[in-house]
Length: 392
Ligand SMILES: Cc1ncc(COP(=O)(O)O)c(C=O)c1O
Image (cartoon, rainbow, N blue to C red; front, side, top):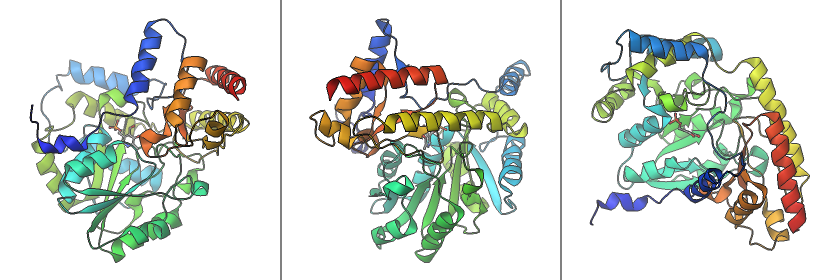
């Protein structure tokens, strides 16, 4: 079959194999500790569930405005005013089917054949595929380990060429967990301004910052070529409701609505009502929940760092650790980039699911999500330690 050439840029997800194997082991009754998936393990808040049920009962189940209903959009803008003290007077919002379609639509709006787009490395897997589907060319830039690999303006600038059209930054980051502080973000905004580039900020994990005053949303910047992407998936544990959004200048949002009108029409009506309840009730992660995540992060980072060859910093955001396991790989007799082998051993021998860093362009690392309860994390640590110590 001859499919359109554009699908050639897509490869099957590198994580698929390990997920398929984990699913197979589970079917066979194996008890696995899942540190792999990025699906928050807590339930969405009960106000969200009630609002979704009410939407169904009220018959709010039809087509809606393309960019989402005005109450929901208003609730999102209010959240930025309240939580981040942003002056939103110049900003408009379009809601989307998750952050994934938000980023897809942005790529369709901004990039075409011959454009270069600067992306962080390690990266969330869809960034480069979306740029390539739009005809653009991804240019990756990796920051320093001390910054949890977040590229700074100084790292990005040498990558800028006459073909560069945009920069994408992700803070708090998946998989590295880094968070830009205000100065670092402002420097990147200044760089984009200097070179007249679009700047896209994926801020889906903005509820998971453990040093609260560290995070500075791009929505606070006065640069007009900025688009901010957010989501209900992580903050409110609403992955299956498929609700995200884009914030930016009205002119941009109008153009994005044209694209969305031919793509999804809008996010689902029911999810819009549920999302409004989430934003209105100020249901970002409660301080207690965040405190608990922080303790889990510190526990796991410390335990993993004590294993032979593992270097595991404790990053300031998201809910992932991204330990450097090159030392362990060497001790086990593997090449430094064979992180897939380690993930396989951890799955088969220890019954612990992790994701190889190579899947995110970060070979020599594994991604570990500290989402399970404390006792399951302790169980995971015991199993990983047993397996690694028995092999080195
Ligand atoms: C960095 C990042 N951006 C975007 C997304 C997509 O989120 P959504 O569920 O809103 O489509 C994810 C999901 O894992 C992510 O990790």
